[in-house]
Length: 264
Image (cartoon, rainbow, N blue to C red; front, side, top):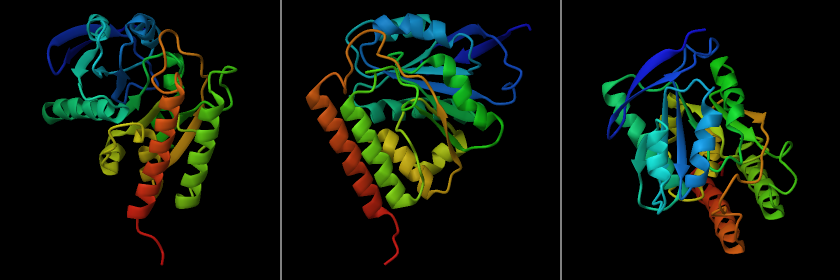
């Protein structure tokens, strides 16, 4: 099958590159957002692993890196957005803002996917995460790590925190999740409906909580999860980081529950 040449106009520059066509996904425009902070050692293998995915735009959000993350991503053909304010949610919001800028003058994406830059999630499984959206079976799909995670890749605090968070979401909304995995995909229209706002580590749980209360059709796909390819985790790599992220996730659930309409 012959590849197609695509012209991509980024927020800062124009680039042309070639992507293999996938006959099952040609009808959908899928854009990918990758938050990244000091991930220069992972950028090249990340883009090599993404080479066989059918993606319209790949947006790498440089979240204040002090290394060559941004330049290596740009050389790999990504749209590079700089978000100096540190925070996972801030980086994701910056990526969405860039896609909105494109959408103002061109067609918006049908689907937006999110993936971390550290190669803990296998980019080769991104197509499987998007597949329920392609088939029209879901509005949002979460890549669940809990069943296929490499031994030790999910630390005990991560597993306990995830279990507690998804249990609280189920109690509050009635929607059952197994994980808060960062690899996920959502329809563009559904993402706009959620009005995402969190700028730190409450981002994933905010999306899942709001998707449940909005009545979106949500699904999960089991995905492998590995130790990061290189570098140190900004959360699980330290006790302080894990504690802060855990507190942020739980406080986000509490705030969303408090603000949501409840039966008296």
